[in-house]
Length: 526
Image (cartoon, rainbow, N blue to C red; front, side):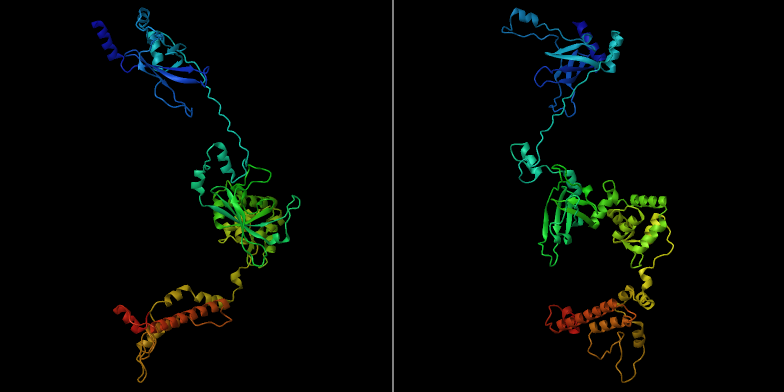
C-alpha cells in the first residue's frame, strides 16, 4: 500500500502537466448524414486519464461543443450489462481494462465507447516520449477530410409571379411566409442619397431599328437619374412651353434591364456623357452631367476611364506627336473659334480632333474642360496646347482686348472697395474742408455732413446725401456700358424708395414703449 502511494506521489511530482497529444479521425460516413471528422486525444501521464475533443472546422455547419469525452479513464472494451447486472458473469466482466500510453501510437485505433478513432499524427513532445522510452519512431500519416460540396441554390426564374419588383418576388419564392428583400447595407451606407444626373434626348438609328415614334420626339429633352443606392433608374421630362406634350415622370424609378436579357441590368459604369441607353424600345443619348456626377466619375477613374484627365491628355499628346499633327491641330482649333476669344466649346473640340484624325469622346472633352475651365463649359485653346506640349505661333486675342480704353479705365477706378468705403459715416474730404472753414456771415453754418444745420433734414437724409457724394461721378453713356449704368441707376432708385418708405413709416409712428424708441421717433429713425 505504501509502495503504491509512493508511486502515485512520484507520478504527481514528476509527470504532472505532461500530456500526450494524438490527432485522430472518426469516419462515420456509413450512417445517415455521417461524415469524417477530426478529433484530438489527450492522454494525461499523471493519472492515466483520457480526454477527447472535437476540432471545430470553420463554416462546418455543426453545433460546437467542447468535449466528446470528459477526462477520465477510458476502458478498452465495453460490455453490455444485460438483464441480470448482479450475476456472477457480470461481476467478472466488470473488471475493465483501461487504455495505457503504451497501447497508443500512430496508426493504431482507439475505441471510445463504440467509436473507432484512428490515430494519424501526434505532436513533438509525444514523438520524443515514445522514442526515449520505447525507441519507436512515429511518422505522421496524411488524412484528408473531404468537406461536402456546396449545394446549389434553387434557380428561380425572373418575374416568377409577375407582380411587383423582382427582388420582392424572388424573396417571396424562397419561403412560405412572405418576407421583405434584404437590402445591401454596404451599398446603402456608402452611396445612400447619391444620384448621378444627365441631360438626355431621344435619337434614332435606322440600322438598329430605332426611329422616332413622332416627329415631336426630336425636340424632347429629359433628365436621366441613376440612383447609386439601389442601382435604379428614373427619367423625368421637364415642361416645355407650347410643346403639346404632357411633361413629368417619363419612367418610374426601377431597375432598367439591358435589351435581350432578363437578368443583366444597367450599372453605374454604363452612364457617362455620350453613352446610349435603350429604354423600352427607345434609344436615349446621355448629355452633359451635373457637377456632382463629374466629381463622382473623376474620383473613380477605374470605373470611368473616359473621365481620367491625365489618361486622356497623355493619349491625345502621344497621337499628335507621333503623327506630327501639331500645326493641323492649331489650324483646326483656330477654324472652330468663330468669336476669336481663344476658347472653343466641347462639341467643337471633338469636331476639331476628329478633323485631324484623333478620336475624342464627348465624356473625354468634358473631362478636359472641367480641368481647364472653372465652369466646365469651354476649353481654352492656349491651355490645351500647353497641356498637349504644343506651342502656339499666334496667341488668339482675348475678350479683354476688345474693351474700350475709357471703359476699362473707368471699370478699374470703380472698384468694390469704393462702395465699401462709402458705406461708412465719415464724410468725404471735400466736405471736411468745407466744414472746417468758417461760414460767411448771413449764411447758415454747414455741419460735418455737408448739409445745413438750420434745415429740417433728418440724419438719415444727411447720411444718404453723404453716400451719394462719396460715389464717383456718372460717366457718359459712351464710356460706360449700358448694363452698368442701368444697374447703378436701379440701385440709386431702390435706395431712394427705401428712404421714402422709412420717412412715411416714421411719420405714421405713434407712441413707443420705451424711451429709446421715442427718441428715435423724434429724429425720424425707425
